Amino acid sequence: MDGPVSQQDLVSLFLYLRRFLKETILSFIGLTVILYLFSPHILAFIQRHFHQRLVFFGVLEPILALLKLSSIGTLVLLAPWLLWHVSQGLKGTFGLSRRSSLGFMIAALLLFYGGATFCFFVTLPFGINFLLGYQSSHLRPIIAVSNFVDFVGLFIFGFGLIFELPVFMTLLCRLRICSYKTFERYRRYAILIIAIVAAVLTPTPDMFNMALMGVPLYILFEAGIIVSRLASPPHLS
Image (tube, rainbow, N blue to C red; front, top):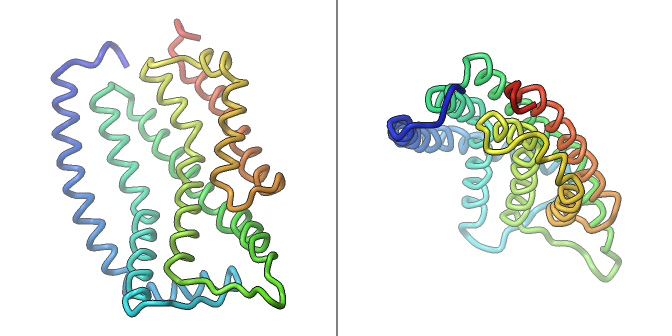
């Protein structure tokens, strides 16, 4: 990045984003329709993975639940394509090198899918088992398919986004909005925010499940500081 962003660069970015938005909407609709054809099999796999039997309470609820599931799956599958276009927009507007923009895309992909996978195989199984542990001979759970899809989809996608923390931190430093020293200076506040986010986003309030998200987030925060320092211009290091 050689200098401040000009008005012409911002106009170019706006035009690029407008075209990108149109392509995204069309791709989202088309892929959602395709995934809808396979959504019953996807839902059956998720049910087996979490050992759940689901019910529905309305005529349209199964259809809407499968549409939600297809939409969530579309967002997950479109992540590489979306991040590629974002990296190209950053390269053209803010003067990032081809190597930097490619590194941004690869790191963002690995962290997004890593967070989603971690949630699906580690956090959610523990959380669901804990929550369903309150059942007894007089209290049995009846889980609606729509609520279950919302619950699982929200946490998987949320974890994927939260794990992008190092990329976001590095990008802020590359754009000279702040420096890695800013993150070091406010580390204690970052720890507090991470604890709050872990308490809000984890499916259960116990310390074990909070630690399953809070500890990886803090590690990612420290990794973000290291990468931000390495990616900072020499005069800001």
